[in-house]
Length: 154
Length: 105
Image (cartoon, rainbow over all chains, first blue to last red):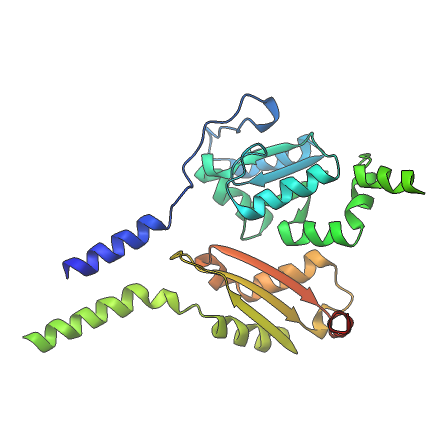
């Protein structure tokens, strides 16, 4: 009986490995939003519209805490998108669940363009691979680094 | 005395760990049934974590004419209950035509 309890406890503990909140770095755009009121949905509505590109992720762009979140950061970096709002859901459990309810999307990371939900890592990756991402960024008025590279090679 | 001890152990074990029965097969069956999928690959990527993680490939004619996000939402809706327990989830959604093209490459 005791060993069973120990196994269960070990199991639950190992389910929360490196997901300890890390202190946010000093850069303004990665500062976490603090939710003092329960109206997370209203805040989220504003958060996703405030910036052209908004990412809800685990960790920060400087230090992603998950492979999928990292993939999103790397893809944006490849396109030369360095200025975007990044919210670390590991620092705020209300945000973590709130954004899933708000987007009606079960996982993190989540990407928004101009207040509109784009998708997670899979979708962003496929958009990157089939060239749609360059177009979508252009619609936002962002000139992708890959678009410029293409132009230069012609 | 010993028998009832073992029985209660077994009960507790299956009760606690029955959630682990979100298996690849269960997910595959659900996708085939609810999305009329003609092909499904489910990879259990849980590694050493207790938290379930899966990577799926779904090929279905129901994806025809639907944007990527819409397709993913269809899969999410189909697996809504499972996704509450699943920790990490990757998906690829193709129409039968896209699937044939991909196989030919």
